[in-house]
Amino acid sequence: MFLRLLFVLLVALNIAVGAWLMLGQDDAHGRSVTDPGVPMLHLLSEQSAAPVAGRPPVASTAPAQAASAAVALETRCLAIGPFGTPQDLRTARGALAGPGVRMRSRQEQATETGAWWVYLPAPGTRAQALALARRLDAAHVGDYFVMSSGDQSNAISLGLFKDPANARKRRDEVAAAGFAAQIQERTEQVPEYWLDLVVADGARLDWRGRVRTAGVGSHSTSCF
Image (cartoon, rainbow, N blue to C red; front, side, top):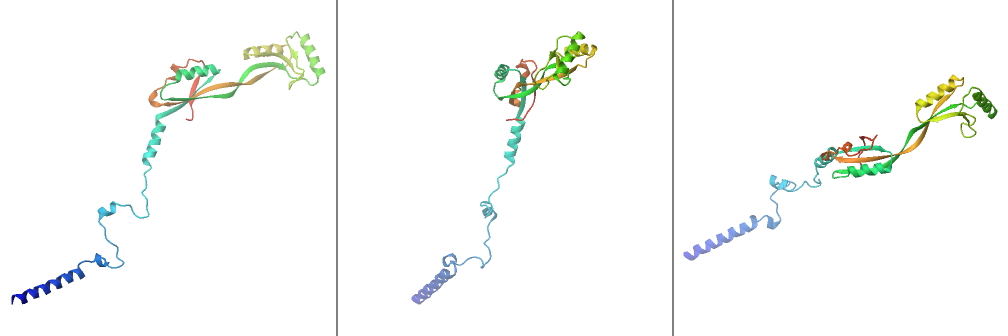
């Protein structure tokens, strides 16, 4: 009786083990826990840990833009000048050198008035110019010169003056003697020297307290 009961128990145990091996191990036999064509579900924690396929992460440009704006607010750019000589420029550069200051020197050409010329326009021919000169002598108008070359050939020069007031006085004297004297402004090209500065706002540079050259000013300029 006991042996028969033991045999039945062993047969039942074998049947149970076989059923578990056949039905309880899906992965071992290549079966999926989902139906064909249905995507696998993932936890939210699993999805946040990995980037979306085919879409690279986008870096924010806000920090870079903020940094650029901060740099623009931290500096100011000035042009100081004009200096009349290179030595004046070098002296100013040495006086302004220091932490937080970047400098560059440059030279430009400027047009300035050199003198005022009083003259009688050329009458036409050389003979007419000489006849006009004899009339000046007769009217006791001296200190003149008949031009013989250049773009003012045959004009009669009555003087070259640095002071415009003196030029007007000479013109009026000759006009009172009966001659239509004129004044022409003479210009020339002269070099000017400038010092460009890029200054950090925190430096608080008082350039006027360091540069003693007369006639020098400043204006805003583009940074470099």
